[in-house]
Image 1 (spheres, one colour):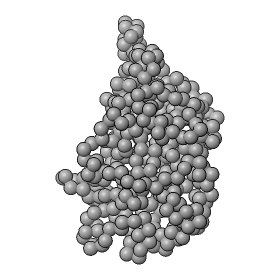
Image 2 (cartoon, rainbow, N blue to C red):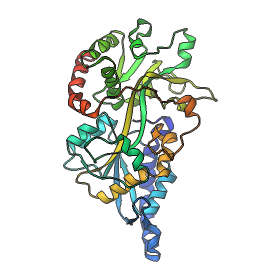
Image 3 (cartoon, rainbow, N blue to C red):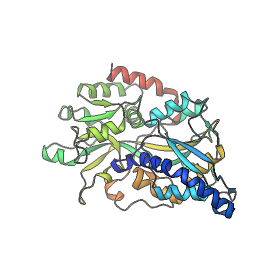
Image 4 (cartoon, rainbow, N blue to C red):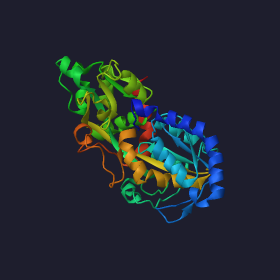
Amino acid sequence: MRIAHATTFGAIALTTLTLAACSAGDADAEASASAAAPSASASTDATSGATTDFTGQTVTVVTHDSFAVPDDVLAAFEESTGLTVEFTAPGDAGALVNQLILTKDAPLGDVVFGVDNTFASRAIDEGVFADYESAAPAAGDAAQYAIDGSAALTAIDYSDVCLNYDIAYFEDNGLEVPQEIGDLTDPQYKGLLSITNPATSSPGLAFLLATVDEWGADGWQDYWTALRENDVRVTASWSDTYFTDFSVPNYGGDYPLVLSYASSPPSEVIDGEPTSAALLDTCFRQVEYAGVLEGAANPAAGQAVIDWLLSDEFQASVPDNMYVYPVSTSVEVPEAWAEYAPLSDAPHTLDPSEISANRDAWIDEWTSVVID
């Protein structure tokens, strides 16, 4: 996803630097505290009643490059468990899954966040994850997004991948805003749309799947042929399309139509006025998951991370930091989202088994139609 914006996008780098700077000093402090009062770094896991004390241990969280968590939420988790959390981010969600598969015999870490429903079945089929079923309170909410027949992944958040548009561009140019996904082939929108490659980007794949859902397995190709003839721009990643290409004031690119999320517009509100909005007919419902890596060096700590990702503290941080909806129904999203980030009433969806059976063939065919 996901699914982060200017301030959020850099948060993981800042968090990683903070951890690197603090971990050496914290280790001595934690050791002294542990000797003086062992219970200080041991906590009773509210999700299962089990005592979890990982004092002096490290857990490595592998994420996509849009992951973000507030420093205080992370620090509270480290203090309650005794863990030092390290992050590694190999790229967009598509690149993340590719790396997980390539390194499955020598895992990049202990637990993964950011595999979405467009790529989840591929990673499961490759045996990347170990089964784990969290007992955290929000696990009941996460269960509605479970992958059928698998206990390897736990849903953490969701949103709708949608085209976003620059409000001022359409007003200033007297151009009608497209309403339906099929409108984008109209010549009046020639050269205005930037999307991401479905072979390298989960939002790009989500949009491809939306067109498969709209026109069927034998009809979507004609739509993409028309988009190519209408000079659609294709980038390698969501961040390229959003941060570089989008013409809204925050970024100043050349494309007033870009592929992003229904939950992106709140980040573009300036002085109380929205500068972008989502086209809700173009949406595909995306769910992000976490999972413990098979062969992880510290699987128990990886499980603790998943419980933490389902905690009220982390779930409450999700909207403002990753601009997606938390799976927990006990957490309220910002009031402004009702106005600026409504979800689609009827998002495009495909069964994960259908995605798994056809993903590679659809991507290859898309590449032949749009790129070759």
